[in-house]
Length: 175
Image 1 (tube, rainbow, N blue to C red):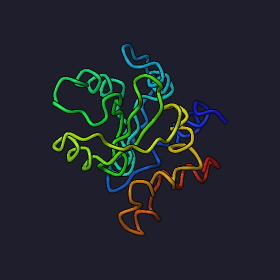
Image 2 (cartoon, helix red, strand yellow; image 1 turned 135 degrees about the vertical axis):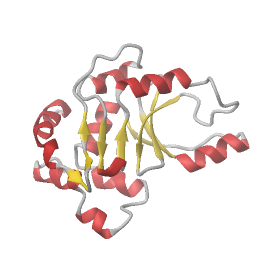
Image 3 (cartoon, rainbow, N blue to C red; image 1 turned 90 degrees about the vertical axis):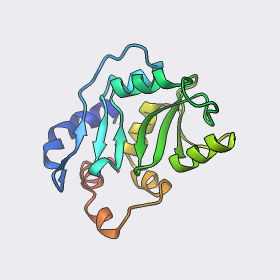
């Protein structure tokens, strides 16, 4: 099943997902101008995603454009010079796309700060060839648990048991 079909099945169920008053958000498709083609393709399917009190937080197209505008305009040293952040996983791990290839990478935000201070480059984890492939496999697919493990796992066993997003994609047969 393609990502757009999965999103279409999830969208009507979003109102069921609520954790301690924090609504889950799945943005409507957008037609972003000015973003790298691979990232724009993702936003044509959905415009941002926020789950579990921000545990998974994909920027909307406007937020990604703001990140693109800041790229190369601040830090003296950028440890990931060709990567554009478009989300956060697990509160501090940055989700990025390569501006040329579209490949999706993940890196620890705390290590990023250290790399900026030290003038070093930062190693990243390559996750998928494109944002759409990433979302299909990791956010709406069988590799969701792997993504959570990559960022250190759930904070508590209860968080895993109560992960409404995971439960929904499992119930729908995606994971």
